[in-house]
Image (cartoon, rainbow, N blue to C red):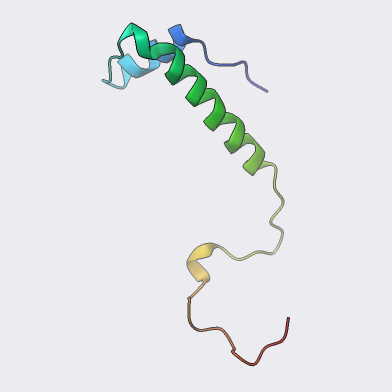
Length: 68
């Protein structure tokens, strides 16, 4: 598990990406980045097993007579 992103680290990362941030936005950006990281971490823990990728799904081509 990684540590949470600090406002200073968020500012440094944004600057490296060419997106300088105003001081008043640093806390909000750090909180948002930490939340996104926690959601992605939770998604990475899911086991999809034999689930095919979304690109293999074709909407509207299901068997209308199939039972669930």
